[in-house]
Length: 424
Ligand code: DSN
Image: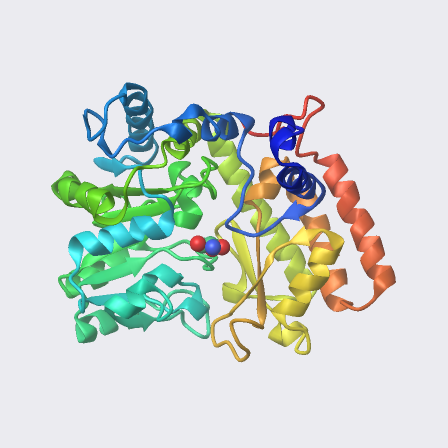
């Protein structure tokens, strides 16, 4: 794609877009929440639906001319129901945080109580952080992972739920590498007679493919974003039982949002159709296998992984033991220099700060989309080791950059026609 239409109007933006395409092609996207969507999803997202206002829901819109918007939204909803087995689905949230916001608005009053995982232990801003509206509107207490094992401390969560008496318990995390036991979170919520919100933003694709247990039918509300492991482009989603359907829909619109981003709803519909194809389960399985291979190889180089490994799409590396003088920021910057793009991350028991934390988080969804196998992920682990071990050594970084270049050439993001290669 050369962005010729954009270039005719705005060469500066065309250059930036072309540069971003090139960056994605020639670097390894290992931010665990990122992925590469197909050309089909991108085409849907850049369709004429960007022009259409469609406040309301299919068959009950506030504006005329919504028949095509209705078709697209109905397809997205039906496919989501099939993928996750939910009774009711709302595909209009602009992103995962807006999906969570709609659930809180529907079910809580200001001052009500949220019990959620500590951000430093793998939680998310929209689960009650003081800098987020949730922390400012609700009373929040947080549970933690077990400092010894790195796994969710389910007993501690249960005790805290009994003591704190929350109105809602939140599960689902941003930097937690282990399978979540949604039944145990549900037991804690029931002990407090609280709702249970499972935010599966990171693992939507793994749950849809059945390689991670599902909270649908366990938690009262399941939220997520649609651009991560499910690979359906930017957006959010809410799933719930029929009994909450009207409250949730009213909370999304008119409660929290105006017109839905119908072009993104179209992207969701197309991405969900792709995820319903037989190849998607294999993709999701390979994401996890690749993360395991990456993690094991990192451990063989002496790195310490939070929880000792992974069951999911990500590993969380705690640098404090292996590289006490190297912060996550230093590691992130050195790796970016050689073409490995991941993020610094806090770790449980963080001793630095969120801006200069002690860990890095690395995910395999995007690498797997471009065809990486376990052996290739082991090669990536070797590069990560060499660079983090020698963040100031220019010769080692030059060698590492060549290896990244070779990997990008071996597993190209685009085929000869310029189409994304490995999306089924
Ligand atoms: N920013 C996302 C992540 O990286 O986990 C979550 O919203």
